[in-house]
Figure 1 (cartoon, helix red, strand yellow):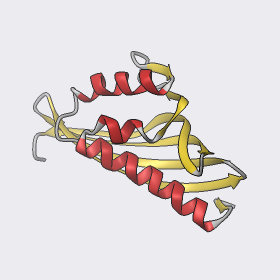
Figure 2 (cartoon, helix red, strand yellow; figure 1 turned 180 degrees about the vertical axis):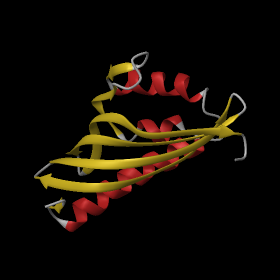
Figure 3 (tube, helix red, strand yellow; figure 1 turned 120 degrees about the vertical axis):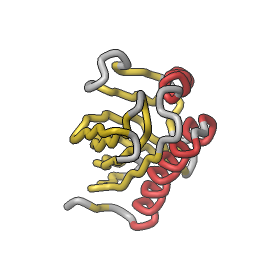
Length: 142
């Protein structure tokens, strides 16, 4: 079943994902970092230069540096599945990004495999693993 568990927890996890996406689009490191568990892990196997980063502080520092290459990014995300078991959930989510870089308009789509944890009544990302699905690069504005 792609969506299981209490509806209030599924809604909270959707809002976690939406908060993450909003923070990317606004380039807000504090809001983005607040979506991560202190002991979180972010893995980007399609970007070997970034690899896997552990710990919220290191994740946010890496993200701040990486975001310098994505000015004006528009980032959207939505869940494909959310399965809750107590204070732990797995989620598959999809992303769509558009940004201008090096004279090109780039459109990237990908998927995350996520583990979320509920701590002190709040859902956070424990781990996120991202894979590319589709990339399109065209002259700026096309």
